[in-house]
Image (tube, rainbow, N blue to C red; front, side, top):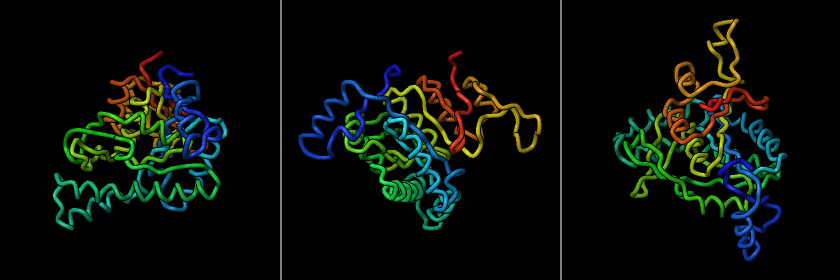
Length: 272
């Protein structure tokens, strides 16, 4: 078991209600397997038609027996549309109603993925940032994440081994919605990994790794198996939210960049 990983028991060992669940929660605090945190971005969740492929990938990951926390972005272009819509409605960016409207896209995507997983008989649950105590502080549309309620996560995973979390949003000290900046679903995944003591967060993108140059423009671009955070900030700023990379470095969480259904890509870490 990796250092500090949140221990969880496979859901088959516990029931979702009653004494069985209480026993399962006790087991969670003892031996178990680590949680994997995997984020699927809008580059692979372009529309509802892509949900099935993502659900199949999650089914493949479940074959390893690990519990999974799945963070999702909105479908491609949805957040930009919601931002424009909120401004058209006259909502102020410093008001909670603005943030609540803009993060609808991630909630929609989480619901669609939950339906696809249920159709594949995967025991899954979709949760809100409020339900897992994902708190942040700062500007309404560019807040910094601070904490997650570990006990809430443990309780939910004891009943369902796959948890879907809509990325990009959190709640502040008043319980109101805040956003984590554009590309904030990357930050959601990294922050959850850090709070649960996981060693790594995996970000699924439309490329199989980080390259030293844009492979779409340069035939000789080199695929990088591992790089440090500083190099990732230098060359991966459009691929990964820079704030998420800085958060990962500060918390000691490695970031893996991979493509849907592909072998591991680039590991971003300061460890040799």
